[in-house]
Amino acid sequence: MNGDSGSAALAPLCYGQLSHFRHWSTRVRPELAQASNLTAVWRLPDDTAAPAVRVALETIAYRHEALRTRFQQTPGRDGFVQVVEGRPRIVLPILRVGDDGWAPRRGGLYAPRAHVEHFVPREILDFFDRPFSLTADPGWRAAIVDVGGVPRHLCFICPHVISDMFGLACLGRELYALLSGTDAVALPAPRLQPRQVARRERAESATARGVRRHAYWRRTLAEMSTLAPRIGDGGRREGDQAKASRGILRTNMRMRAVERLAARYSATAPSLVLALAAIELARWHPDGTLPVGLTSSNRFLPGMRDLVGNVVQQALAVIPVPDDTEIRRFLCDVHRRALTAYRHSAVDPIAVDEDKEAMRARSRIPLDPPYYFNSLTEQKEFGVVTPAERTRPSTEFVRLSPMELGTDPGMLKWRWTLGLTLVSDGYLCVWTAAGSSYRDAALVDGICESVLGVIRHGLSLLAHPGYGSLSVNEFRARAEQAADEQRRAIS
Image 1 (cartoon, rainbow, N blue to C red):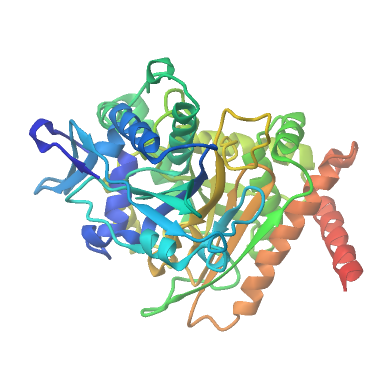
Image 2 (tube, helix red, strand yellow):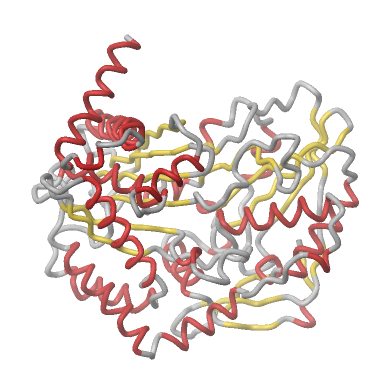
């Protein structure tokens, strides 16, 4: 996609964009920022013509500045500004494959790259893997997949600094609405654009609210500097490459059921799953306290849900897991701590990095959380579309980036790390990554499996009355017992 540079507008980056640029530009050149690419494949409505897809994308690009944005290096403090072009020009190639060349799995699938190679044609994966030039053209591209002479799918890819999973879901909603005959005028206008978010964040940074946010980060970083797991203690060694394992868990209940279950305990689905994972991970911490990174946090704020552009910034939380606390109270405490972290997420990443540098001399461990939790439960678009649900698109798959899977060496600040991504329809992706110098990788794989087991069986236990009064320790033992019984039954 190219833009008309005659009416370009320059603006500072929002903190989410700036944190991505600071993270990636230290290791990759901006024109080679493919390590954080996000990918989606949407199944097009029947009888959709290629020109209609082109018009729909152009309409969406006019509505959302992120799809008309490139980035320009500057000598200032941030190092980059965003350049919003006034007029989009869409390039939409057609990738033709035979009837037997495309065989996506039935149902919605949220899958890492290793899980899709065997059913997605090589030429389409090559289309995804080409690097972007973030300092030249606006950073996204799309292509129609023609199966047996019929336009069947739309492939879309962009770097994470352009959009995020929430943004892709918003794009999918609008795309499907336009292709289904909805007039563009009838679509709700975006309440915010990334450059408006940038102005608001920077204006708030000097206010009392901004000072409180920064103080929260500084206080949490200081507390994190004293916490480390018993295994893989300390940072990764120089030259370590990430070796990752991951599993995709289909829980026993639909996501709406998980949301109803969470509401019963005065929590949300993300907080519920985070709490269950923390119960198992606490076993590897001497004092039972976990440092956690939460992403997609400010996407839950008003006006942020209908942005295609990326405004996400990681938030930090420290979660104590006391064994003798009633599980019901523990779930509420995790939910409260997650909300507190969300409210303190919009912080100047340059100031945070300066805080880290000042603390690094006093800390023997990395000042980055070893655990990451990425919640996409608000996005019902990542699921199966039934004939009665014609208001939203069907996503064949979304490919997790190396950054999200922990396979990128830059994410491996610890000797090993673990992340969770929760999506709708009960899918949960858990990944672990260990440095190549870490010899007990089998133990890390076992932790991944045990976390999955406690989450799966913990959800089932919480659905039964009476289990909410158990202590955390008793609840963990019941969940592990259920997991062991299932393994024995399978073997």
